[in-house]
Every structure is written in structure tokens, then in C-alpha cells.
Length: 229
Length: 121
Length: 225
Image 1 (cartoon, rainbow over the protein chains, first blue to last red):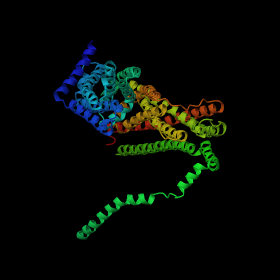
Image 2 (cartoon, each protein chain N blue to C red; image 1 turned 90 degrees about the vertical axis):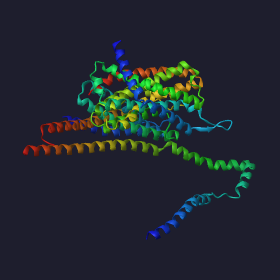
Image 3 (cartoon, rainbow over the protein chains, first blue to last red; image 1 turned 180 degrees about the vertical axis):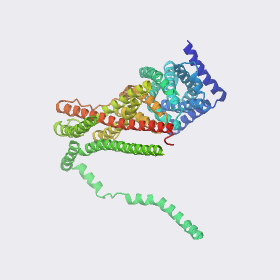
Image 4 (cartoon, rainbow over the protein chains, first blue to last red; image 1 turned 135 degrees about the vertical axis):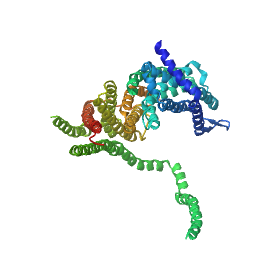
């Protein structure tokens, strides 16, 4: 129980800082919306009645690329903040165990990403007429699991790169290849929801579960030894 | 001098623009392939004369087949390419490693000299 | 003594190259389906396995490094990471040349090709971190090595299933007789080569690490400035 309390304390600390300054959230959400709109320009086609519509099959791709890109912005900033005010040391010498510290950071990022998704998902529904919530349970599961996966892996890498010179450039370079399986699963699962293939969707949800649990374990293994001063 | 330059520029720039705009048209005209006026007539005749058509086919196809078969049977080009690429990449790796080692040795010598100098002083 | 072993192994490799080439081009029959192009297969597959071996070596030694903080594990991880980039490049290049020869396209989003591409890109990221990460990058790189190894099965299965949603005839020949001999001797050859490369690269990394340690000691002692 103590452990959970530490996790929530750290996550809540991050969120409170964010809610006061609001410098990440708005930029992330705007950036994600902009990515969706830019992609729509690339995939316009003429519909049956001569009106211009956007190719609906690519909607899952837009959704997850927008989320992934904006999350990259957010995770880099979340750790930059710790570095700028040199508060990471304070966190590390606090009585909270390292694992709780890491999970708290990841949880903070998770909530931030969830807020961005609260903007992007309706946008996708609005622009592409995509019935994302045809299966609310499955879609929610996909969103939660994918967001958790990005938050966990992203937090590890952002923490690792915190003290590096070229961190802004290196973060996507090392993060995206690791996230590809997650990305495939999220996109395929979402398109399963869109075309009504329930079996496919649930397969990918199970895959997401495996992915998330593998990387939570790997992150807990490595985080401690990677972030030590 | 500058005056003259601008005068030339005034002439040269429109000329270049005109050339750039006209060049594709000219190329397109030049590239129009020759079409024999006899072609349509021949095609019509061929369609009518089934025997001629079959003969023509017979005379053309074996060569083509043989050529294709040769290419696929001993497609040396791609195999040689693949093996070449494999050893080429390995050699590049070895050369890079060798360069790195040389740099390391040079660095070691430099450090040894510096230390020797410091010790002498 | 050690030098003798290295030289013997290198000599064995040269003999091995000649031997495998003989087996591949003079003993193994021409494949009935893929014809002469199939000759690419022997070296290609051996290199693909070495790619997997290099990534796993890198991951395991990265984990050991994070646990023990002993420089030699880091040297091994570094060597294996660079070798993974080398083998990844070889696999991708020979694979796409084979694709061109067999299916007349350079690239196909085939499960294996895609997996190799993704793993290769991960390892390129690893090398980039080591190259441009600055001080302390060995720990980050170690974390990345561990993650890359955990990722291997996930990448493979996700890509495989993603692909099988669009079924396609796969061209995987069953191997018999002299083909099998050519195949396994190629694998053995590249395994020995891999170990040799790994040891050589590791020695260089070790030298670099020792040198920077010595330089620091000399700085501390005030011998150099």
C-alpha cells in the first residue's frame, strides 16, 4: 500500500506542476491535432458524390501517429523539467523506492497522454467519420494498453537520456524502433474495431497485454541501474 | 560595369525562362515515336490470316523463352551482387575497426609522451 | 598463445570460405523452385542468425553490465551492438537482392525482412547513442540493449501476424542432402567469423576504455593537463 501511495504522490506531483504551468499539455494537444489535420491533407480523395473525403482506412494510423508524436514531446519535457530545476536528485534521495519513482513518472505521463487522446479521438471521429466507439470496451482497452505501453517505455528512455547532450534527437531514434510492435498492435486493433472484426481486435488486445507486461518487467529491471547518479 | 551586367541580366533571365518553359515541349515533340502507316493494315491482315499469325508466333517465341530460361537458370548477376555486398560490408567493418585501432595506438603514444615529458620535468 | 589461437581461427575461416563456396556452388544442386538464385540463401540465412546472436549477446552483456558495472561486459555489448549493425546491413542487402532476383521487387513487407529491418534500426539507434550520447551513454546504451532483446520476439510475432492477415505463398525450401551440408557449413563459418570479429572489436573497445581511464588518472595525478 505504501508503494502505491508513493506512486500516486509522484504522479500527482507531476500533474500538479503541469496543471499550474500548462506548458506541455496544451502544446501536446495542439501538436496532435495539427498532425491529424496535416495527415488529412495527404490522404484526401474524391468520394462517391463528388465531395472530398479522407480515406477512412488510414484513420487508425493517424490516431496513433498523432498520439505517439505528441507523447514524444511530452515525455522529453517532463524530464527536462526535473533536470532544469535539478529536482531529480531530490526524488532519488527521497524514501520512495526507485520502482515507485519510475511508475509514478510513467503514471503522470499516462494521464497526460490520456488528456491528449481526449482531444485526438473525437477529432478522428469528427474528420473521418470513423466509428471508433462501435465497440466501447475493446476500444477503451486498446487506448489504455497502448497509452500504458508508450508511457512505460517512454519514461525509461526519457529518464535515461536526461543527462545527454543530444537528447531531443536521440529520444525518437531509440524509442520508435522499440515501440513498433505496440504501434502495429494498436493500429490493427483499432482498424479491427472500425471494420467490425472483433476477433482480430481481441487478438491484438492480448498482444498489447503481453507487450506491456514484458516492458514493465524490463523497465523495472533497468530503470534503477540506468538512472543512478 | 554594373549597368552592363544588369542589361545582360535583363536579356538573359527571360531567355532562360523561355527556354526552360519551351524545352519540355520540344522534347515531347522530338520524342514522339515513329508509327508506321502500314501498321494498321498489317494488324488487320494478321487478324484475318490465322496461319500467318501462328507462324509468326512460333518463330518469335522459342528465342524469348530460351533467353528467359537462361536468365533464371543462371542468374549470376544477382548472386554475384549478393556475395559481393556481403564481403564488401564485412571488409568495410574490418577497415573501420582497423582505423579505430590505429587511432587508439596513436592516442596511447601521445599519452605516453605527455607522461614522459611530465616525468622528465 | 592467444595470438596463435586467433591466427588458427582466421586461417580456418579462409579455408572455410573456400570450402563453403565449393559446397554451395559445386555440390549443392540447383533448387528446383528458386533456381540459381537460391545460392544466396546459404550465406543470407547464416548471417541472419548471426544478427540474432549479436543482438542477444548485446542484450545479455548489457544486463550483466547494469548488474555488475564491470567494464568488460560493456565492451562486449558495444562490440556485439556494432556487429549487429553489420549483420543487419548484410541481411537486408542480400535479402533485397534475392527479392529482386526471385520476385523482381527489391523490397517486400515480408515478415522476416520487416523484422530484420526493425531490429537493425534498433541497433543503429544503439550505435548512435554510443556515438553521440556523450559521457554516461554506456548505461543508456545498456538499457537500450536490454530492451532490444526483449523486443525481438515481440517484433517477430507482431510482424508475422500483421503479415499473415494478407496471406502470401512463402518460399521456404526444405533442405536435403548436400544442400543441408552447404547450409550448416555456412552457419559454422559465420559463427566462427562472428566470434572472431566480436573478440577483435571487444579488444579495441577495451583499449579505448582503459586509455580514457588512464588519461583520467594522469589528470588526477597532475602529470598532464
